[in-house]
Image (cartoon, rainbow, N blue to C red; front, side, top):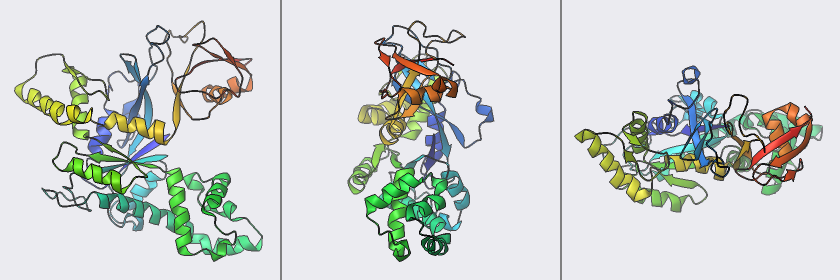
Length: 396
C-alpha cells in the first residue's frame, strides 16, 4: 500500500510529509537511509492488543506508546502540481509518474488562501481554496483521459470487429491503474453504459474516467494551516462544497514541531493526542511556541489533525483492518519479541487470506485458525475483525 501526498507548491505539502514520517524515527526500525528522499513511512494508530492480553508488545517495525500501536504505511511526497501538469508543464510528468503508483491520495490544501493557483505566496488571503480541489481533479482526470483516448478509437473499432466486450478493452488499456476486468464490468454496469462502445461520446468516456479515479485513487483533503485566521471558515466551505470527500482540518507545522520536540526529549507527545507533557526546561522561545500550538491548535481542534488524517485514509477510505499474529501459548517470536507484527488487510479478509499474507506455505498447509483472545477454533473462511489476534495452525 502506497499513499501519495499531492498538492500545489507552497501549500505545506512537504511539511505535512515530514510531520508524518518524522515520528519516533529513533525507535522505528527502518533503514531510512535507503529510502528515496521523497518516500518514507507514516504510521497509522490503533489500540494495541497487548493491553487486552496483559503483556507489553515489542514491535519488529513501528512502535507502541502507552499501549497505542503505530503500524507503518509507505507514503510518497509527489512533485508539486501546477496548471497544465497533464500536458507536461512544470514537473507534470514526474508528478503523474509518481502518482501512478499510489493507491490513494492526500490532497494538501492551503486553507488560509495565502497561495495562488501556481503556488505563489500572496502574503494575505487572496485565493479560494475550493478552486484547488477542482484543479487537482481536472489535472488527474485529463491525464487518465489522455491515456485511454490515445488508442481508444483504433482499438475500439478493432475490438468490435472481433466482438470483444468493452470491459475487456478498458481493463487492458487502464491496467496501470489496477483496473481489472471485474472492476471495469462493475463500473460499466454502475454507469449503465451501452455495450456499443464505438458510439460513446467523449463526455461518456470522461464520466467513466472519473469513476475509475474515484475507485482506484480515492482522495482525502487535508485542509492545512488551520492556525491561520480565516482557514477554519474555508475548511467549513470545503466540507459544504465537496460532501463526497473526507475533509480534515490540520496544522502540519504544529505537528512537525511537536514531533521534533518529542524526539529531542523536551516533551512527551503521542501522535494524535490533544496534549503533551513537558519533560525538561524550555527556553522562552520554545515555551512560547508550544503555548501557541496548545491554544490555537490542540485546544481548538482536539489535535493537529495529521494522525487523524492518515488513520482515516487507511481505515475509513481504504477500508483496512489491523490483524496481529500470535500464539495461544506463546505471544513472542523466536527472538523474544512479544506481538512483534501487525498486518493491514482489506476488510472482508479471511483467516486463509491472513495465513497467505504471513507466508504462502502457511496457507498451503492451513489446518485451522485460533482466536487468541477467546481460544475459539476458526475455519479458513472466518471473516477477520479489526484488531483480531490470530494463531494459524498449519501442516507446513
